[in-house]
Image 1 (cartoon, rainbow, N blue to C red):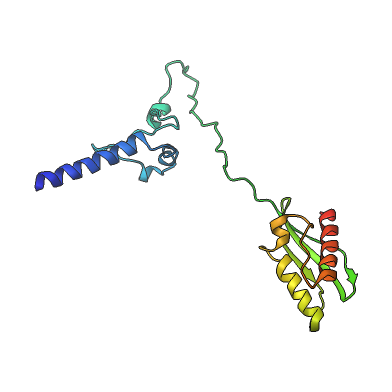
Image 2 (image 1 turned 90 degrees about the vertical axis):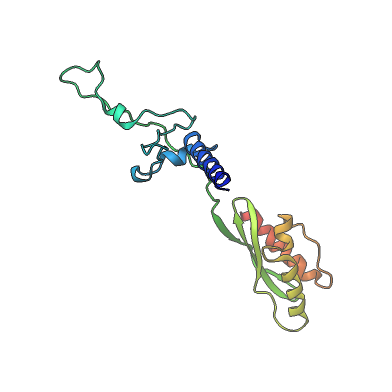
Amino acid sequence: MRRALLAITGLAASTTALVVLKGAPGASQVAQDLPAAEAPVAADGSAAPALTPDGSVAPSASASAKPSAKAGAGQTPRAKSSTAAKATTAAPKPAARTVTGPVVSYRYGSLQVRITLSGTRIADATALGMPQGGQSGLRSDDVQARYSGTSGEVVARQSANLNTVSGATYTSDAYQQSLQAALDRA
């Protein structure tokens, strides 16, 4: 039983040491960025050698600080410096901007469409100043529910070419006119 436990512990320790010394893909950069107090330690207790991104062993700090044999008596040795800049992998987020279409008057009132763009894509759309109450309000609510919001038809189609809401033809047409003007302004 003890032998099995020791074998498993030894296997785990050797696997860990292999990963630390060899490095998993992309892990070598992380090992290099550790502060000296947290640097990897070899099995014998000494500091483990630092690895370069290609997996080779980097020269130790003490080796690079030694003066070279070529340096003259009055010359100071030059320390090696890393000239490679770290590249960022995250693309910059496109700035969100808001564009408002003109007020469009129609048979039951007037409305105006405001869209939010993220880059060149429509991220949100909403109608402003739509009629409230009565049959006009119900039609306005139907149009707003179908077209507006982040999951509405405007965002899904990314255009003003929308299906007309049944029973709300005038409101649908006014919404599409203001939306198209807002897209033209964008």
